[in-house]
Length: 164
Image 1 (cartoon, rainbow, N blue to C red):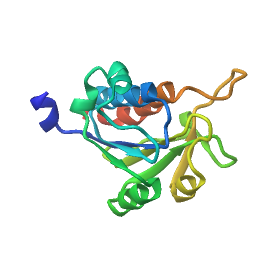
Image 2: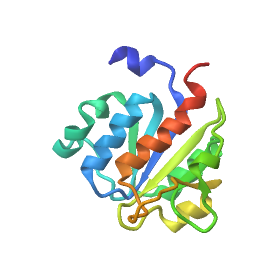
Image 3: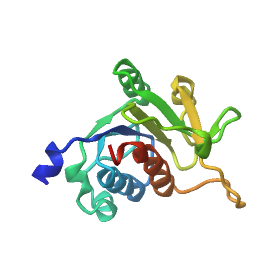
């Protein structure tokens, strides 16, 4: 754990915008640990550790991943913009870019916003985003669970930085 804490992190952070499910929150902690992301921002109604249901799916990643809780997503996004992060909302909108058409660049700082399970990313956060990306889907549901979505998006964000 000590080595992980001091290891260089990928220049990627995640912003959870009013995520309801503690199992989803724990899963995003675990994925953030897997890709050694910089930070996890828990915003609004998003629960924070310690909680049994977060720990159940995080399996300890809530201890290794740097995280903070904030009452307001907009404040966090403003802060990240001021620090030079490219803000990406993951949402299906008229102007969204399919994930396979978006080029994550090495060493670029990204903040990836994942939204509420029912309502998605808040309109305020979408309006502040540099880009909106979506995962192309062929099925009838047209959405993925946040934990699955986080895994797919964060793998793509991490790839340019994995070997160099």
